[in-house]
Image (cartoon, rainbow, N blue to C red; front, top):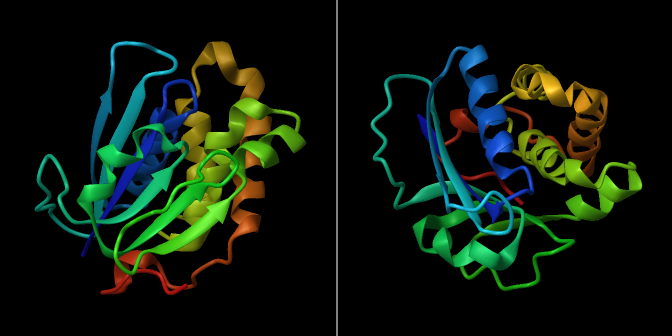
Amino acid sequence: MEREVLFTGVGGQGVQIASKTLATAAIAEGRQVMLVPRYGGGMRGGMTNAEVTIGDGALRALAVATSAWSAYVMDPSYWTTIQPNLAPGAVVVVNSSLFNRAVDVPEAKVFEVAASDVAAELGNPMSAGFVLLGAFVALTGLVSLDSAIVAMRELVPAYRTQHLEANGRALRAGAALLPAHGAPAWEHDTAVAS
């Protein structure tokens, strides 16, 4: 079974580290993973997308998923770059602090998380990407929350270690916002039920 996750946002929102955290956690749990980052030339403010494919065996994924199982949406600015590549019934987790559009994916299961607001309430607005990832992980069960926290700790560069605890709190806070799905998402033929 394979599950594809399309990530989108604006440079500086933590989309790339969130995608790498999911990929690293899945590898640590023994699954096959492909990560394809896509971003513009600017570090902040430009398009930042990524695609993570996770499988329990050899991957058959294409370099661009044309019928992805799910999406992680931090910002509406580049939503149209991933929306056409989502399968009907896709699981879409959006940062409702910023996302105010129609999802326009047939039968999509949309879950709203005020990630930017929650991160601000936690005292670390820059951790909004991890709030959204925590919610996504809890909802889908693609990886465990513990694996995501360990992966985040491995990926944060040495010059940013002062953020490790805040990022861990953000992941846990996000996970508390959406109901855990139960059995891991890769064990189901259909998307997470809403």
